[in-house]
Length: 491
Image (tube, rainbow, N blue to C red; front, side):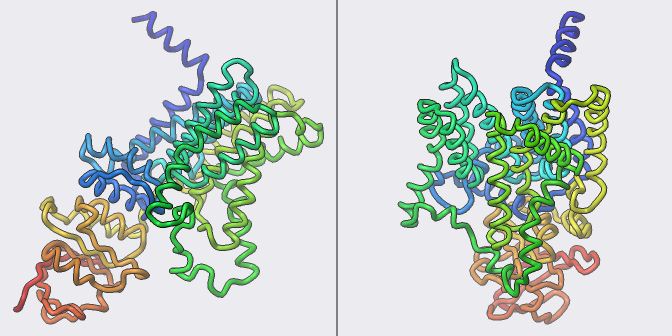
């Protein structure tokens, strides 16, 4: 027993990244009771996954890529839980992304920089917050980080470099099944291998990395006649009028959003260390060393994000900054190669870690625990009975976070939930009511209420619908009303 303990302590001392992972995991588990899924995309992904579990099929095309649904399907099916299990899965993926970040930073620079890079990623506000939600960005970053690490081995290692090229391509083709940014990364990583004249490695990497994009493009062509159907996305910006009446100031603010997000979402100190290190490397002409080629993905993606945000084709949301953090955080190691006293280096190392964690709590945009804006939604979900198997749920719109929070916690399957989003759905669906004659109705003085005529406290008439709705008020909470409804032929 004593020998095992000593071996474990020795292992942790020589591999400090595992201490980082353990602490990161414990912090998240302690904060989990206070976290709430407040991203509509996260809820939508869980609901789509549960629908896929009930009717599994091989997905060959679409707007959203399929691997995130496949990843969540097995644990949700095994444990029959759609709230805690998806969160735990993403917490684990976020925490263990620190491992390839540590290993890459140590190869590029030094162990001190590797430790700091791992801590920064684990504690970065956007990573902390999104690890509590079932968003594709967290598993995407996990696979990108491993691909980035093996890319370095592909370029610098002579023996077994073909194996590294294969693994880098494998991790990146998996990432390409989560987010389309990986498709661009394939081209950028190919460029890095190309400028280092590693021709065999380039062939192996490209052949493996293109497996999923090729499969998806073939499926898109067969189903839609357009190999890039999925990459064109859903014009949500056009639907909500995001690009109407733009001013020069609006465009400027959009352009600057992602550089600002990159700074605040990992806290300003790591960002300053990276920028100071790049300036130092440029002044001392170290920037021409081969290892600084690994800045190319970060620089190019930052420019792409800035341009697409300014043009209105990329929503200005902090969650997209996780990729730029993964691609840049290893370069915090430059600082520890500067001609600075070791005492100052230790102060920066051990002083930055608590500051990164503390600064995440400073503003609403960096707050590391996701919370819905209307806590009355929690009261509504608590009142929903467990009798949901044959019941539907109709939700009036009262904010993306609140509305989808109720949908997630209702326990009702995706196909039996109707959400009025205020844009695409502004009326009751007669088809939905015919197929789901009983269930629960949540009204919130939103778009659905405008389509209701109250005949009596227990009887609603719905515009353009011949049947009536008998209702029973179950809960009222500051403007939110939960009813049990039943469609009746006549009253």
